[in-house]
Length: 191
Image (cartoon, rainbow, N blue to C red; front, side, top):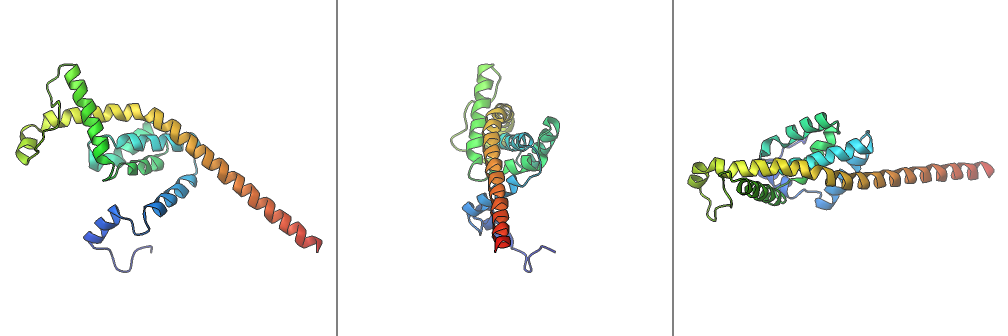
């Protein structure tokens, strides 16, 4: 029912992913409106977003939605907003998230004397990745999941305050519209 008449090609889909047709600003505004209309408590919405944000640190790229949903169910956060929160991890931000996860994991491996990569090789090739996959992947995995756990609390606080103030502003605007309608009705009845 809500499909395109002419489906997008693979190239157009990829282009749309990196550069939305309606623009990044409008996409973000749309996301804000979708978040404010979620019928749940501010706590659960903020917790879901924080979980989605934290999952972006993990290296298992194709499973971020699944991980966010499972963690949201366990912690009783909103599953839909947890999935929306994973959108913070995108092609522009993943390098920073993954660098942080790998660096933190490498630090922990070195601190505890566990053998693993302590730095990213300068020249990466398929043979280097194949020969040292676990020594590169395990620090990244450890660091990513620890950063997931650490990042939930500060991001929850930030998201909670943002959502709470946005909901208050929405409620205030709604009351103002009701008052204006009531005043207009009374004014019309007086005439």
